[in-house]
Image 1 (tube, rainbow, N blue to C red):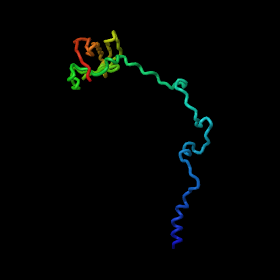
Image 2 (image 1 turned 180 degrees about the horizontal axis):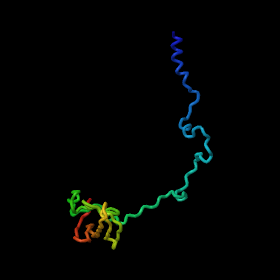
Image 3 (image 1 turned 120 degrees about the horizontal axis):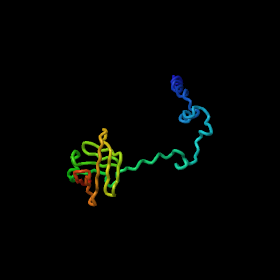
Image 4 (image 1 turned 45 degrees about the vertical axis):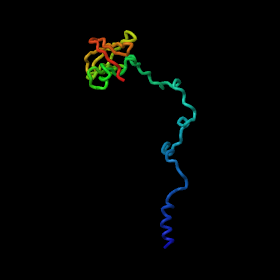
Length: 155
């Protein structure tokens, strides 16, 4: 009886082939086919991007609105905290975002170091729009397109 029990327990172990370990990853990679010399992995360093055609994407277009104008502005510092305040606006590289619409600039001109003008459309429509702003030495944004609204930079 002991002998039959030992044989019954030993049979599943004997069914396993543990003679040679296999590398399933390598077998799956080449499916048993020999590796062609041109497909072989080399340890040589990759060439610099400048020497590889098409390796560099084209440079991004620079943002036309100067960086010193970009940011969020409002009539007063307390208005900066009110996300829906009518005086609040955000200037980015190509857009002027008011609380209820966005001007997407198709053209931006910089008449002097401390002013810019943007002409474009109201985002999502074909309605033309323009804006013109100047910046004082005290970092105050002035609306030069009419009305003369004055805004301070939000922190």
